[in-house]
Length: 201
Ligand SMILES: Cc1cc2nc3c(=O)[nH]c(=O)nc-3n(C[C@H](O)[C@H](O)[C@H](O)COP(=O)(O)O)c2cc1C
Image (cartoon, rainbow, N blue to C red; front, top):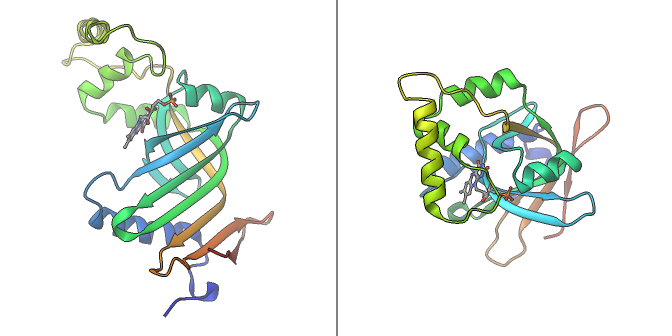
């Protein structure tokens, strides 16, 4: 029995968490992986995978390097889109919205919980910039291990940032064997309430 929109959760975040919890059990790895699409100011798009760190009433949070291609895009054009695809469940969730930076204190707090090698790696990697060979990266790693030994604290690199995509639309898609799939789009209204619209597959 296929539900109609009245039977769906009124809050898309509840719906998201229901599917996300199921994906944690069903996916062999990375149920938190999502494609992130950004675009330059001129409209040239780029898409890559990132990991979801939190989904709450503010939006969908991920971490990255502000100086990466995506960071440069987001600085000049904060509009972005996300797409989760949980293969084993044959489900997809697409999100569109505006990206803001997470509060610095919150990102500091999270960064401090990361394993040592990841904190050092964040210093050593100049994400998205040209790298002549692997040994240069290894050298940088060694330099930062000396600078910030494991016994002490590793500060968060100023460019290592939390981003929150604040959704304007969230679309839930699930597969039917006949290819006539179900799609429901939640759209946030000016009052903050969500309206639900079924879409043709
Ligand atoms: C499953 C998966 C998860 C990833 N998670 C992240 C992430 O959370 N943050 C990040 O900066 N890059 C992550 N990456 C690497 C990005 O896909 C990408 O290579 C990197 O961020 C540089 O992208 P850019 O040059 O478009 O900015 C992940 C890659 C994969 C395959």
